[in-house]
Amino acid sequence: MSATAVTELQGTYEADPVHSVFGFAVVHNGISTYRGTLDDVSATLRAEGDELGLEGSAKVESISIRQPAMFRAHVLGEEFFHAAEHPEVRFTSKSIEFGEGETVTVEGELEVAGRTRDATATGIYRAPIEGPDGNERVAFELETTFDRRDFGFDWQMQLPSGGNVLDWDVTLNVHLELVKAGQEDA
Image 1 (tube, one colour):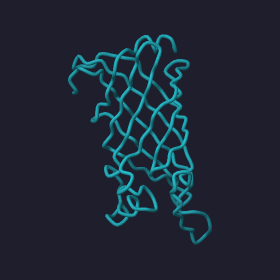
Image 2 (cartoon, rainbow, N blue to C red):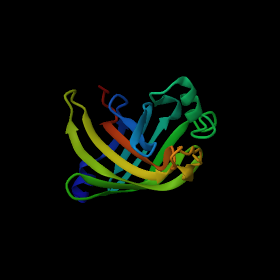
Image 3 (tube, helix red, strand yellow):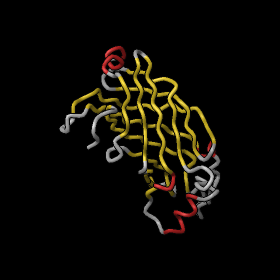
Image 4 (tube, rainbow, N blue to C red):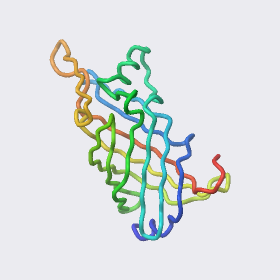
């Protein structure tokens, strides 16, 4: 699919903000998974010849978490995102490799809270289609896991029975539906 995928993609594609989201998940209390989203997302896929590049960002203030305002302030504060100084999470690809079927691997750099680390995301790619609005669209569903301490998220609390309140590993899920530039968004 690699050669086919590259030849199918030509031009610039922009994220459809209604159908794109960055999600995160972290094990909480050692027994359940806490989930949230960053909803204000932008992304651009550029395809020129055999060259592909994907970059995206999400505004940290757009975090959607089901908790009281005090918890939201804590997550946006210095022990986590430090949103006042680092208002966005960003990703820039270095390579995009298409595998069997719809599989894809995207390697690049992830920037969170002012720290940049290498990241590899895997998932699926859906080739260009014409949507019901007549616009050409492609999609990526990607996932990566990282140690949150790599980005300075060192806050932790111990459970009375032992163990951590929050796991160190965080899974980031990115769902992008991209519309070929120069076409109307639906």
